Image 1 (cartoon, rainbow, N blue to C red):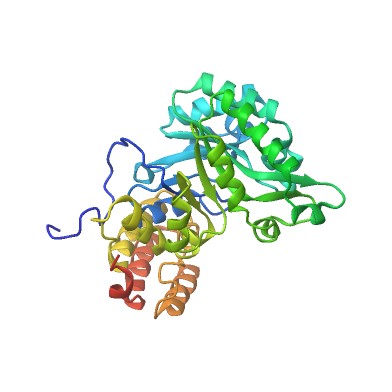
Image 2 (image 1 turned 45 degrees about the horizontal axis):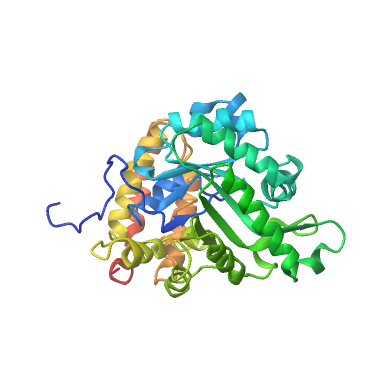
Length: 362
């Protein structure tokens, strides 16, 4: 493979300085370790985040299982959910001990389940507690502790009406939250440019109904020049990302990167390394075939891996047949020794449905 493009397939290397300009958001039930391994093939250095893992689960549960990842996933940050400073400190230290390069506190998730656990977006209503949590984690680790949040939170009756309005009182609360948490030692904030509605909206509606207010995040960035402020929400194209990077320190993508992973390759080429070229679909599938064979031999279900790979050919000729081949093929794979060979054949064979030149040119 002497003539393959530089960085075409990620090699395991020690993590040096991390460029946080481009990252992929923590997404529950999506950004598990198999998803992250797949996405890493599209960018050697974009920062990836785990799903949110609660501090209680890390403290009292099977840490080895919860925090396990492949070295190839680096650079990798651990997102934690919780509101107990002592518990968060234990979880943060466990993350550092296992090699994560950043600990992120979830102050942005609006789901009822998370809200009921007294963490996520509802923590923005308690800045002093968040500051205490950040201080405890900072005392427990030497890696960065960051916060992912919203531009505001509304709850109770009339929440739907409030979500359309953003006034000076809203901004004052956001400014106060940022001030208190920064004083506790957080220097990097990832801001989803929407309000969170606690109760009355589903998690999906919370990603779409509240209006995007990039101007609010931009104002926050101007008011806190000594902090790193990244923006998240609604970024779907290279052009939109470029405009955001004109004023934000970094951009975080969510579902667009999951459903259309070649966007990560475009962003890496545009903003991280213009000499880099993404591997062809066939090479990416070969990489995933080798990974899947290894994981399935260790007892992982084939569908746990392939379910994250359906977007490989998104928007290209053959995409539908590619998805069908994976979805139908994985259902036919039975457990046992033959599954290892079957998954390899399935993934390598799926390359026949992809159009290499249209996707691997970036």
